[in-house]
Structure formats: structure tokens, C-alpha cells
Amino acid sequence: MGTVISLIVLSILIFFHELGHFIAARFFGVKVEVFSIGFGKRLFTKTIGDTQWSISAIPLGGYVRMKGQDDKDPTKVSYDTDSYTTKTPIQKIIILLAGPFANFLMAFLLYFAISQMGVPRLMPYIDEVTKDFPAYNAKLQKEDKILSVDNHAIKYWYQVGKLINDSTDDIIKLKIQRKNNILLKDIKPKLFTEKNIFGEKITRKIIGITPMIKPTYEKFGFIDGLKYAYDETLNASMMIFKSVQQMISGAVGADKIGGIISIVDITAKASQNGILALFFFTALISVNLGVLNLLPIPALDGGHIMFNLYELISGKKANDKVMYYLTMIGWSLLLWLMLLGVYNDINRIIIGG
Image (cartoon, rainbow, N blue to C red):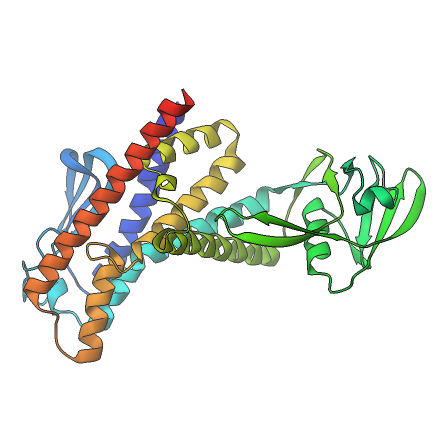
């Protein structure tokens, strides 16, 4: 069942991406010949207006084929008025950006839905106090509730670490509730060096406490929910962009690249943990699709945007042969990345099994 849900999630995200291209193309009068979810043999096709709407056998992608534009052969063009070829570079760039934008919008809507359902949070209760750390020396205890950090009121655990790290003072002031008593503690945090998810060394301020598992849900009003959705979409985008940057620079090894098997597996597990977990992961995949499609790789939206920016700046179109060979290189790179991802997925399964 989890695998079926994963494929449905992927299909929905692909549909929204391609729908973005479709709506923008039709807005500028471009004929869309095919709108397909999946690749390979067409299992279902229905013609509505001038467009063939299809569901194909391999549900690992999708495409819209516009008149005068063919990713497999960029030299195939048409100069009819309803052709993609005849549109201005600005119009083409908008059409190309519309797909990734739809993915970002999808993520935004999912995060907004989460904000209305309730974001999982931990209450600010202390569980373990690490021996010989500042909190231990200040005699903090299990089940103490943190009420404020430097006079900033605390509602949830995540605020504690953020305020401690953001503090510019050597000493932080904690207000603690212990049963019916209110205690004030002055604590000097300890600097701790660790590696982040990208393997980079970072320095954090810590006092040596861990949270008690007392979960609750933070619900947002309409305006605050919109802000939460915007912030989460932006944070996810920056994280994925930095991941790509680290991979290109070599800071993150090629063995960390995941493929479709990982996506299906993690989505399936998320679906088993409830609708919130599924929404969180679906939003992250949607942002992932948006960011990756903006990479300046020929055959991706970002590559086509690059060609159109060249035309916009130089006033002349890119050479057809150059576009063709660069597109073929782009497809080869994408195929290599897909195969590498699948290889890594299988390797993890073998090692894990």
C-alpha cells in the first residue's frame, strides 16, 4: 500500500509541474500537443481540445510537448503562430519557470495545510541533564520546565536551542518551573563543534540538556500560517540548493545521491506515520523537483532558460547544432545521475539487508 501511495504522490507532483508549463503555454497561445504523466507506452489517452492527455507505463516523470519544441531533438521547430518557437525569449522563460513555480506553490500549500492542522512540537521540559555540563553545574533537573531564555518566553523546545545560540551574552538567564516553584538560573553555555548534514564543521552553544518527549501541536492563524508556509518553502529550497552546491564541490560524495527507489521507500514510510509526515515529505520532494529543474543543465527547464537568456542578452538565437549537442550531453548527465541514484539505492539495500 505504501508503494502505491508513493507512486500516487510522485504522479501528483509531476502533474502539477507539467500543469504549470501547460497553463503558461496556453496563456501565450502555444499549442500543447501532448500532456503525459509517465514515460514509455501510453496506457490511457484522451484528446481534449488540441491536447492528447496521457498516462504512460513508467510513472517516473512526465512531460508536455509543445508545438515547435522537442527536448529529444531541439532542431525540430515550427514557425506557426501557435508554436513555442515563435514566442519571445521572455515568454519562453515564463513558460519554463511555470513548472518549477508550480512545485514551489504545491510545497507552499502543503506547508500551509500543515500549519492549519498543527505542526508537531515538543514541550520545553528537560529530560536528561548531562554530567559536568553547564546545566548540570547549575543544578537543572529532569522534568524542569523552561519558561524563558533571556526574558524571551518559551512555548516549545525548539525555541530553547535557537535563543541560546542567538544570544550575544556570555551568560544566559533561564527561568525554570520546578513543580510549583519558579527558579532563576544564570548559565554560561559551552561551545561545541560538530558536523552538520553537509559534513561541515559548525560551532554551537550548548548547556547539556535533552528534551522530554511531551509532544503537542502548534496551530497557526491564517496570516501566521502563510508566513510559516513561506519560511518552510524557502528553508527547504535553500537546503536543497546547498546540497547540490556541496555535491558539485565534492564536499558531499556521489554515494549520497539517492534515486527513485529511495524516494518511493521514504514516501511509503512517511505515509505509514500519518498524514502530517506524508505532507512534510511530499512538500520536500516538491521543492526538490522545483530546485533541480532550475539547474542550468540542457534538457532541464534551467538549461532552456539559459538558452533563452543568451538570446535575450545577445539578440540572436543559440546555434541549433550547439543546442542539440548540449541537450544530448544534458540527457546523458541526467541518465548517469539516475543510474547512479539507483545503484546507490540498491547498494544501501544490500548493505542494510
